[in-house]
Length: 190
Image (cartoon, rainbow, N blue to C red; front, side, top):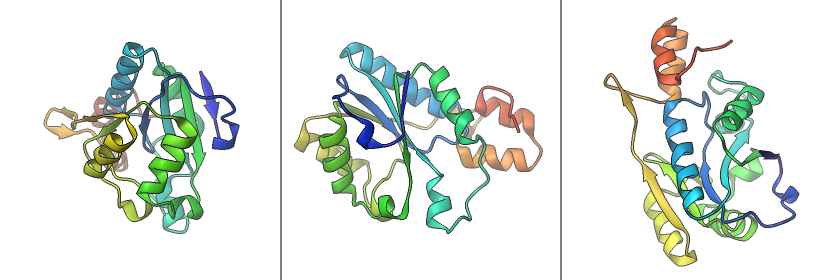
């Protein structure tokens, strides 16, 4: 498993990269479902399973340091992603400059030109680019243009609760650690 902290570190092309993108705070059961799909597709096409995540949390940058409390600090998050069996983690610095990249530029200059993406796996509520202008419909349109595949994974519900970092954060703040554990798939750690 390799951790790449800047796209300039990509010296050689990745092997048929199958990618998912997100903050993945908590690395919960919903995230693990995305990682599973990435690994499944990567195995089928003899490619690298790749997770792109960000440090710091994008909301902290966009709100001048005022973001939600993290469920998992960055080192724990990277360890949990590694333990999920992902080949390569792209842990990119999230800056104001990065936040200004348009959805189209993100796809063309980063995903296609730098990474050479073959397949992208995203959650049902995925958005990206400046002001979150890119959505799944736009991603699929660009996939047709550039020849990569897209799979959208629907929400994961446990006992009628959609698994999300926001929900887990709320449960932790309410002291409902057993409920948070069900959504995380492990004990919450401070």
